[in-house]
Amino acid sequence: MNVKNSSQNTVKKYEELTFTDDFMFCKVMQNNPDLCKHLIELIIGKKITMITYPDTQKAIEITADGKGIRMDVYVEGDEGTIYDFEMQTSMLSNLNKRARYYQGMIDLNLIERGADYEELKESYVIFICTYDLFGKNACVYTFENRCCEVEGLCLEDGTMKVFLNAEGDTSKLTPELRDFLDYVAGRRIHGKLVAKIEEEVRKARKHEEWRTEYMTFEMLQREKYKEGV
Image 1 (cartoon, rainbow, N blue to C red):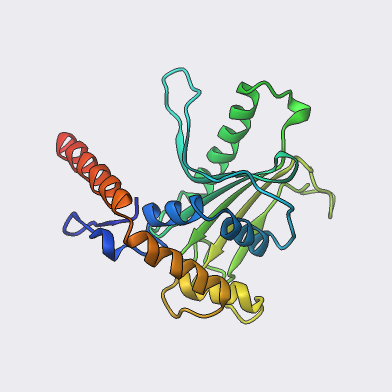
Image 2: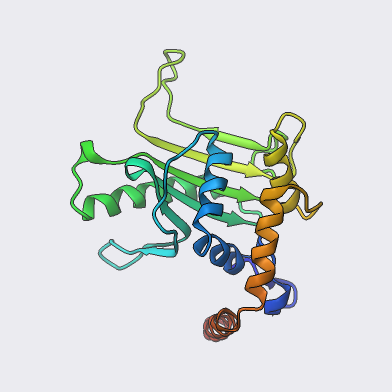
């Protein structure tokens, strides 16, 4: 989770958590499917008719040694299209490889559930970043598999990777996406979507059961850290 100060190994108080902290991000998206749907539409630029109820911190463990992944927010939409949301505030140079791994594990999970190769659904792995992973000053980086030799030829394998950058040039964005990235970057709270998200964050800070869950989780994490040391 993005809640620790690496220099002091301290943990944020529950009432200090913001939308960009993993725990809060997951709780807000889990309990507000309309918000989650709206955010998907905003990021991918098209309407979807429905989503299943978000499954936060979805665990996929299908390898022989039990090694898998735990996703922040896992959503199934139209015709089974899968959206994996990840909030990323720590600078990691291998985020592109993580996106590849996540998408591969999504496919393997579908195969384990009985799908044939031709039945694999479209999937989006979406990282909401507070920094520019690629250094090109864009706010949205969308990747799909294309042929190097034939211009315009797409593999059409149904996989997309999207990286949002809250520190990029927002001048060409829609006002709503600009407001959202300003909010993620901590610059301002503006617009109906952002106001709704912030309202849900404030409600969540008063949720005593979630507070206990957060404190319990962090206690376990500290114990694991001590064992590792």
